[in-house]
Image (cartoon, rainbow, N blue to C red; front, side, top):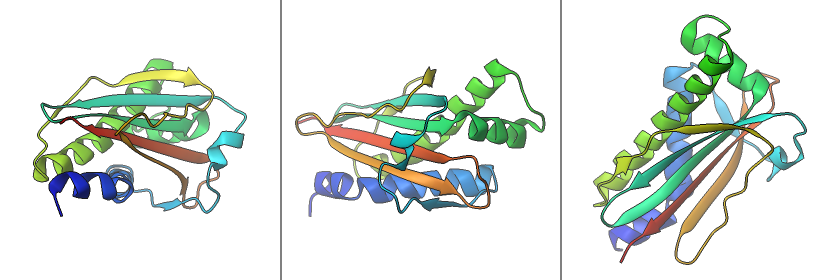
Length: 163
């Protein structure tokens, strides 16, 4: 099996492992994959979206994390020890996505695809769905935070191997 097959076939496993690791180690929160596929698509409140690009000579991609506003507030309080203002909440959301993207990038590097991370961008709005294009692989999963009724979060990772 070539490393490009490993990278694309295990994308959902890699991204799920990265998300679990960040939530358990950095936030002391346990997450579970949602049994309801697309459950975040019915969410009616505001979502914070953070995206980080992954770019290298042989690979390009995006990590997109989407959090309900209430969960972003909780995460900010955990990270900062206080509620935080709107800018701090956006910064923390971006930093969490950056940590997840860093773990995905490390696994890509170990598979022979060195890359760098872009600067996180954060926006507020309704759910975003990345579209799979061409040879790119896309993983999209919804997750529940165990013991917290703050809604479902969504992680999307899209990776394209450059020939």
